[in-house]
Length: 486
Image 1 (cartoon, rainbow, N blue to C red):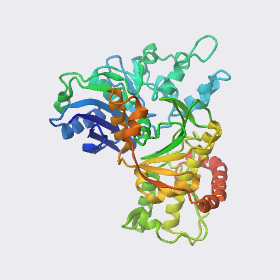
Image 2: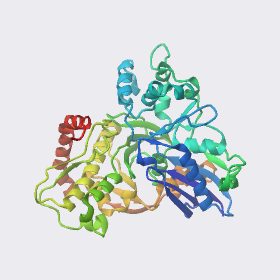
Image 3: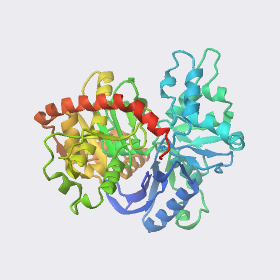
Image 4: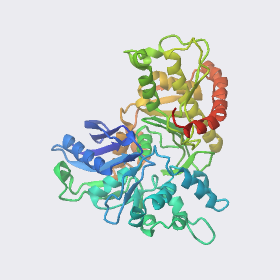
């Protein structure tokens, strides 16, 4: 039986699995990744996780390919030999806010990338590195995603993929008539812009001989370039085709729509994802982690039966609102100073009302992104594919359907990111005629949630109130973010 090894370095866990030609998981392993725990991370820890996962999974069966995806908006800084220069900066981090603001002021009029210059942009973080860690900046030869670091350790070749490198590629393109790029203006070493950029399904190279432990058994096995975990999960849900939207509820939530042509919308990222599919949307800072925070905050009020049991109890006559900005926000607001809030609370509200407010608050954020994307695309999406930890909750899936007014389909794969890696691997090996054919054959839907039209209508004024509350509380959030506790 031929297998592929797929790995997903996520915010909470590092997952690895061996999958067969039909996309079925033969064996899998999971370890805490530590990636979502702070603003910096040690890439060497990820290498140890990969070696440990290989040791737990590899047997006598032949492995045909390795496909690794992982968190994006996380930069790993390497020298010319591939050595790590300093801890990686994770997606949580907003340290480069001042640098991003300065770069926006320097950008020439009409430069399309200017609206994407925020604290999470690789160019802003490179500006921070130049100012705060000049020794590392001077030795810099590559800025890559976490999966690229692992791929480089496996193959000895440093490269990125076209999807994950979209913002870096834009920063390397000329931004004025003189042909100067943003990276050039920052004095970034030329080698950084020269890192090869491949298609996700391209073969990066074979695993090097002589690697330690179980990794040594992979010598000669081709390694795919792959892409970030969002791309892999969308593929694993079968959503990489125009006319669909996706919602990935992991540690954070990623929401977007897929079109056939390039489009632009305020606050949304537009990236060519290949196979004739243009992504319009992007990552938030809210998601299943927001629900985990609520569970901890409620303590003993959280029932043994979990979320579904809590939501089965009656809620108050009047709703509460929740702004889910516990870590600032990325798409679509790009504001690290946004803060979370419960609004409209009264004495009748209890744990069930707070839980509904959290689910609805994240769904309202989804609807904000969806409405902007649909306007830009010129048509409504036919369906939202829903995956990640939050998709295990039928109530949350139904809430998304009712809030957005769009059908929500939950995939059959428990870990769509791993399935997406396997789909990409089999497509890259030529077992299918491209990603589209591979995902059509291997990505299956487990259940569908049709929107309740009466509830969708009832959500309209609540969504309007939520939108107004976001605008009204931004100034207060920025003030609070700058204040120390008494």
